[in-house]
Length: 440
Image (cartoon, rainbow, N blue to C red):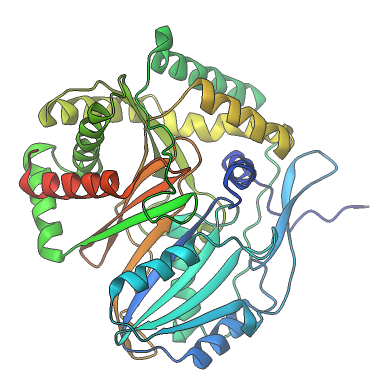
């Protein structure tokens, strides 16, 4: 006789648990958790009433609008959903009369930094009408969604062919087995990190600025850019010539590293450049079960200051190939399952300690495949879709790239006042010109 019905549960994986701890750490340091935004740009004004009806139809009584992690009797954490109707008041509407894009930027930045109304809410929406364009913003919590998963969900929400269709959360077992494999992966990751931080190397990083960030508001700041189809094509062509086939992320990261290298020198920040990157472990096309929770892993690159672009490409490419061969992303996923025994509060404190003892220079992400494919929404042409992630408190600065309809979007995200406007613009211009010209 079964006492507990656990057949429909999703037990969190190790990366999910780490994201929950990072959310707590970010909230403690900045007042804002670990979330991100999708910004969908449409040609024309999207009707706000029709949008609210759409959101209510898809999100009401869904299993992914609200919820929280909870421990089972076997101590493994699982996800407990709370079904609740979507309230029209939960979507904020703004109509800007000024055609000055600075006012638009200020509003988007302000909305990006706004926390969820409570810890259980996982999605929030805002609609902006400006200069005959609509900006639909979907804020999503990384406890439940990663970048491509959120894109796929937004596609589902806005797709007229999915009217009223509900998505259920995936089911996943507790994975309380294969302990030897988990511990061996943990040993492999420890050896990897020791090789990175051997001899207590000095790491170049930014210190907190005395002003209030390059938008002079609070602890988070952003600069975003879009490279056109023609510009993105030039980047692709340069990648093949200088880095090789399927090495777009390495090529782009080389110019990001070079720009940071130059900025570090002006601020007399001496040391190796250590770069954590996110790795999406899904295939190009994925099922609806892969929309939810975290289907990502990590790599970590260690490069010296003062190298040329060809040398940065060579070093990063060699490290990338080596980490793929030695299955570092797999070992991160596998070993992280051991972290679930720690309560969120303790894991968050442990991560804070490790971030201080093992600092990083900046975060980087390149998502080469989009997961939003609608050409129109309510008969309005889709012009662009870009991301505004809140970078974690350590390293406090990140550069993130996404693809959309042959465009290349770049966002520079800063927390804890690590960059001012001048530094942000310097990085922005240096990275873009480098990628397009193939040199710095």
